[in-house]
Image 1 (cartoon, rainbow, N blue to C red):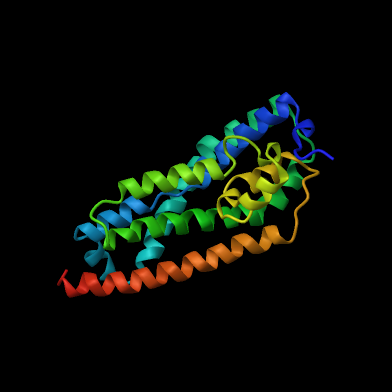
Image 2: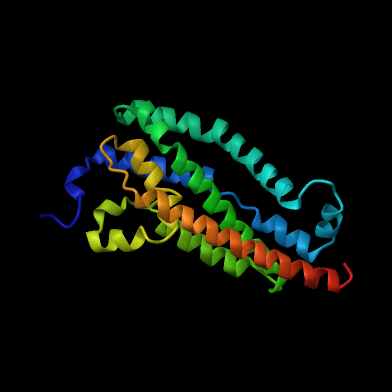
Length: 216
């Protein structure tokens, strides 16, 4: 028994995977950390907290608007050309199956970005942390190559982290109609979403106390 699935890939299959995985990563990844950090370090947060709408709703909706523009202007044209040029079967059915995982990917991506932004409550600069996590996220998301090409043991370890659910899993579902969606692939990203959400709420509550105690 082979320990990798490299024989399952053709040259066009690998090219299609790399194109779609990178498109998915670029479109799905929402950077709200810069805006959050800027608001925390400046007067923006205090002003926005006075508004009737929730601060995070404002931030997330702005990020979603930018994502929609990227989908329309970048993802759809390149995705369509790639599909016709390289070919894949049952693309519509695959896209429908990928929807819940794309929602998982959006949620994980934005929560990671929120956590990076909220770290501005504790650190003077966040660019180093942001750059490090962005690098780790890109490499471990499967955007460089499909994890099927690695050893099975490595695949299992990687799939226990949140990053493959940002790009690898959605891309495999879209590009491979025979890809087996296992139950744990629904559970693991959901667990990370809950964990990241709880941590975000805790940091936000603690950070706001410090923010208000400074008289901002």
